[in-house]
Length: 281
Image 1 (tube, rainbow, N blue to C red):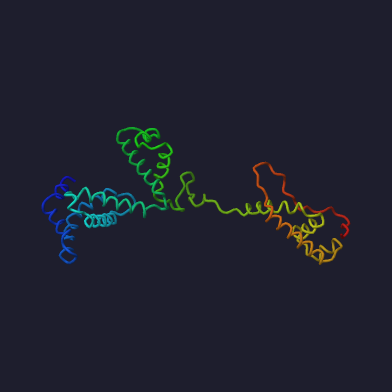
Image 2: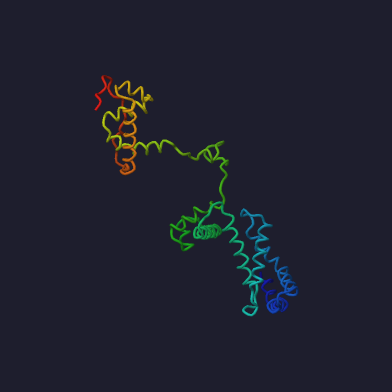
């Protein structure tokens, strides 16, 4: 941008910025401001073109660069510097990069990871231009990052945009990516419930276990259980209520301790031996 550097220091450019700084708010100042913005708009468009083919339309990039240019014009102080380009270029490119960082990622990625991604991406391109393979060791040496940071940046290289769930997988032609996603397995909850109820079931007496088995595993009604055991239906109801309460309280106050060691089989409410029912206590 040598030509633009010369324009930034020519008398006409300096005079316009001096007038912009001195004039009060009004039509005259706004006219000068618009003239400066229009004069430097081609530079903003050229900066935007550097970021084409990155998932954003060029016209949108030009509009974002124009926003950065307006910000640069409004903030530039001719009393501090005679050159506008060194001030405007970082402002415009910063606005474009901010847009990519805040609006173009499919998911939120921490800024630190985004910076690592950019460093690894640039280093990979530079090493490729020199004919050197972009190995982990080369990237560490070229970027000055640690191996862990290079790995994080490399993992984020292809995370800018998300694949559709309808996208085909690379290993199975005709299979969509969404077909590989798992789904909640209700059996996990069942395992947890059994483990939580284990100690409470062990604390029941044989009569309570027998009643629970007949009610919940054989699906017998309370009256049928009462007839089979030779006790009253009221007694059956009290046994079921008391046993369930005991299991629930035991699960709440003494949660099962899950261990990675082999566990004994969970206690089962097995069918009692056929024969005369035990006497009512």
